[in-house]
Length: 362
Image 1 (spheres, one colour):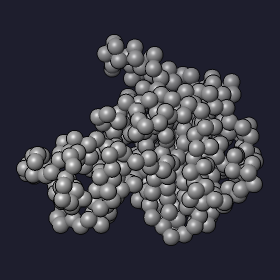
Image 2 (cartoon, helix red, strand yellow; image 1 turned 45 degrees about the horizontal axis):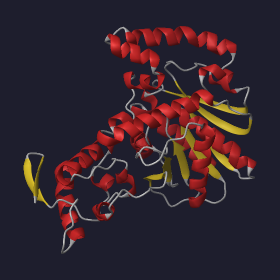
Image 3 (cartoon, one colour; image 1 turned 180 degrees about the horizontal axis):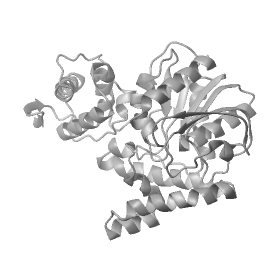
Image 4 (cartoon, helix red, strand yellow; image 1 turned 90 degrees about the vertical axis):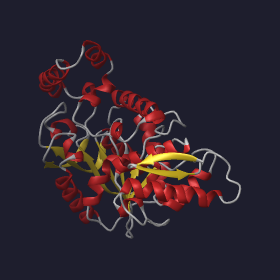
């Protein structure tokens, strides 16, 4: 027997890392019920209650898995809660000797209408970033997040956007073999969604919706005029951050561009991953950055609906000038906030825009 202090209460639970002779599932279930009740400050909680339906959110999921690790010695990434959102499902996962290989399709919102919506996250991010956004999107279509490979440390992350796109296409075609497809991508995920749309269209499939959320190519692939206009803003932005950093951190900031997101206002995957899974997430971020620097978009003949952040940041201020060389039919809308806040803090406006896009695409 082990003790775990949860919310000031001493809860006795069986160590789920051991073999329990009589009824291991029951033992794990009882332990999880106590942990869930403590973390969620809610009682009673039933085995079939959905974590998010009883007050859970991504940050509480982090605390939940911290407590599970303390009680059992079993480390799991908080993202597991989307694949096993009930106590019964989570107990079944914990009975397995190792973490199962989950699909990159992460169910973010239920819905009965077809086709489903697929949304790709940004560089170094996680589909958990979309929690607040998808809650506000009004649609009858189910929404799936596309989670990058490698977040669990079991697989090596991709370092080419083309490989990411193909990986996701193979996954979504198990759920939806043929179009029409509804695709959304945020930041780097917008480039992945664009590549997916190009590949699916090349296979003869229909793309009913392609929405890119403040997504831009790497600065090296911008036109000369866009790069010239962007340089002063980049210099000012990076200088303002570096002047507040200790020397070693400032040096790391210069030498390791993928880490710069840590010094932004972004509430990304770094908030949702700790412990042994922080390393794999950093590796996924670094390889995603490499993928960004290598990817040059190709001409796309379909329609792209582009949503830009109102507040200028380190990204180009004129998406039309950036994307016109590659996209013939480009529709641009603007939402409040900067590149990060549009998703993490000002998502009501973005949700309204996406609701409209999905209504038109249905």
